[in-house]
Length: 208
Length: 208
Length: 208
Image (cartoon, chains in turn yellow, brown, red):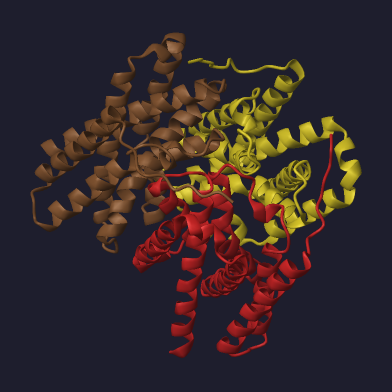
């Protein structure tokens, strides 16, 4: 099927991009090669793993299909080889790739959640957001930072908007392919406009 | 049934209180609205989620019954609206509410664990403590603090005492309602006396 | 069976050693008795728990067999009693014990993973490493440190080598007892030589 193949490819691309971003974060903390691999793995596959554990889906995606482990390993090796020049990567390419990964992970997360009989739309939207942002958040916790996604600009919000759109279109009976493409486009658009325009959610700050 | 309704209400109250305390912690770290929602959610539902995952209970409570997500959202909105005045909340009200949440979560955790055929009393007590304290501990780890519960006064100990009492009364054949009420009262009493009298467990400190 | 008994004993020894190392880490952060117990528990049983959750094995080892909880409690009490003299433990004994724990946990992790029909060798090796090192890593995250295992010398690498050896020997049809002993010996040898010779993986460091 066209949809599946195209989505699988996009998913693999998302895994590669997230693994590279994880490996770069590990490099900034002078981890050894094993550490770089672990952080790359957690960033790329942590969100989907948490989703599968919460929904009780077994085997977890990368246990069922170890090609994911291979993808992460390739991404980490590329980053290591790119080494000292990797921080000069055109930052715009990374931001667009990352936004695309976020969009694809979100929609796949929502789709997998909706396949479970016991999942209601609010939970499905949440699973989309978890698939999209939890990997990066776990990476930040392991690296001893407060997760960026909890403090920063429109990132999880773009993911949530895509999840809401998907559930709505699904409810209205839109064909899956159109629904998938529209929701991915929506996340991508919101995220990229947010970066360009430096949109941010209002923050909540109290002092004692 | 009177027991169930009363316990469900208390459980909902616990979720509200824990979500507010999480939202306040997020506000102290200037998170954005999404971050406040996540921390409120983790604080209120993280303990029960960890318990369900460890026991292999699916669907997890808030996935089965999304009203929990609504409760957390309401608590977070209230805290945000209360905003700048929220830190002036009468601290005694928060401490008593939190102690009540701890007590109810503990007893519910023990009850759910004992319903599983493979659970022995020590594991059930542990599941009660996890239900009561793990949400706050995960909140602290995400917020980049060493969990308060590992360093502070009698908090987990009050929870453990309630769990032990529940298992003991259950073993002696006490009717569930009496057992539930007594154990909740015990946790509440120990916790509030501990706060009042500034009781603390001995700490263990080694230097190299 | 001789194999099982011998391996169970070694596993229990690993639990004791890892719990002591966790309790000492907690002591260095002046936690209270409850905190020492939690960190001892997480260090000793966290890796196996994460493995069981990822593989969907229920009940989790220590829930099925609460003797593990007893072992951790004993180890923690011993450490507390050893108290102020515990940091004068002959460091070599701790390093050898820890390396032995790492070796046994790795091989047991690989064996349990291979028993699941859906597990391929790469995933089994990964489960061995997770069983061996994740407990210590979670301990470090809770204690607000970047996990040592991501930055330090040959530790996870020794575990991975043992996992690879086990899968290879298993594939070649080696009897389980010989396979188990050889793989444990391999992890132990690599780890101890690495400590002695201060081997380390190359680290990856980028600056912005």
